[in-house]
Image (cartoon, rainbow, N blue to C red):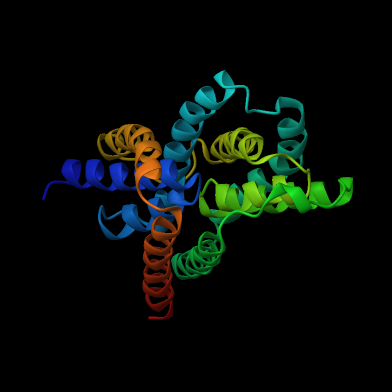
Length: 248
């Protein structure tokens, strides 16, 4: 199977997961780039940021048209993550491949747990605390910067629990936060490290964007619990593979 076909297939599957579950699909982009397409961990995290940014911007525009993006709230939340995202981008270039792979394995396992638990309701959210909101935004930015993942599986619960947004607003606003953090990390990485193979990254991103639209329709046909279990199982398998790889 050619690299182009692999990129298109992996991108479509990841986009499908993003569209169906509202987050978490980008966690699969890095392992797909490493194990299917031969990227190094450092190059894979940078390529993933490109894919995450393009996919998030596309989805953000759709949610904005529906009025589900809280721009001021999202930008304030994202502002706390810009610095950590940029520092994370610098740190990623200094980590060994084993350390980067192990860290990603841990995040994949955390994502699996989040997916299995589902998305918490905003009805029981606590009052907004600026320090808590800043800490959540900074933590999300750091994860995005170091590992090249969008962090939607962390952003949505944080926006629900910390900033008391409704479900639709939390999903739409999380895309704004993810986009800002991803761009900040990409700026830091620009010109550093090995060049990306755009013949692979471009079709991967395009397939992910198209897959995200199909994921919305899939979510309407398949029970959410079934989708979560399948996706969480995949994430746990990825986490085990990457942790084992890092230990070798």
